Image (tube, rainbow, N blue to C red; front, side, top):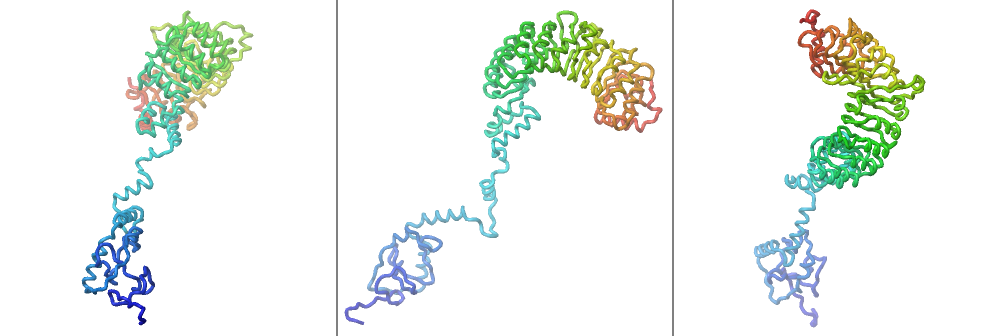
Length: 567
């Protein structure tokens, strides 16, 4: 060893230390020992124990490295025993380095929350529900996670099938998302408020008009007896643009001001129901102004159950309302004894009429020349005609003026007629009905008609047996066997009859004929045999559903003697 070279110091295991302190060396035990700040004895090294410098992966954190001090050298180094080295090393591995404790806990927490469980490791049930809710959402909350536009589309189908009320009102109470979808004005376009579910007041209609009905197209306010002009004015002010249909039947406190405001302010209004209204609403001046304002836009007008001066109103209809399709003046009381109906003029003024309801009215056909009747355009689009007469004994008979000639003049070009109601019209004969230019009649009502003139009932049934869906022959006394022959014609072609509803109450039908009739009409769903004098006791009632099926079974298995009439 050279004189100027200082002797190299030995380490704790007797190995010579390098000439200069090294932080890192590839040689075993070649690096200088760096004691910690805890105590002097922490510099002892045990090759069988790995030191912990903060991170569980064996990497020292930046805080731990910066806290290290330069090595201290001592002239007297003692080598402790092996057991002492192990105990100190174990203590050192359990005690984290200074400044590393907080970072170590945070790292461990991150690994527990982010790292997936190892293969075969069972995750607690609580964690399962939390992971499911955070990743996929709670399955019980599907309605709160639907997109708003999808929820509105679902509501649209519900509204179309069952109506807006009360569904939308109930949907608003579920949650905020459902309420946001339910209050959209596009769902409140067709509203039926005649069911008594809400308060029928002006304040209610005012609030709805301001908050829900900006796009309303049709609204039914039938039975709102407390509704006044103020409520209609709110409707006219806030939602007149899209309104097309309004029903005001039974709104007895409304005046002509409301109806005139609707006609003047609603450019798309075409359906108006003023049944059972105030006399001021259906006065001549009010109706003339309304019909003139609506003009050719008017499609449907209902004035049923009112006291009318019908002559001027019909004249206004012929003059201004050329596109009228439905007119209902049933059960009206006129200022004169009879309503004089000028049929040919009416047909020229309203050629598109499809529904004409004069039931319960005392109507008389106006006189017309043969030339005028021959040049009549008729009602080519007419599908429903009701001339039924009130048969109450306390009411004067208003059907005396309805005869075969009047019926033929009304239906001279009505080839598309589907419903004909002649109940109580005793001056219409079977021959007159057979002469009608109607080929596919589906609903025929001839209850309580002429007795002695219905020898041709079988010819009437045979003419429309291919298309009849509903037939009412009740309370008629048909002569001889004409009724049995007519019923036999209905069921003569088994399996081809489309008849679904027949009323034979008060007739002389027999049980044997009922059995053959049920076998030939498989589509039948309703049968009325009340007060039929030709049936045995127990059969004289109405049948439908399961009762009708049971009647078919009983008649099929019954003996002929049990079906005979017993007084």
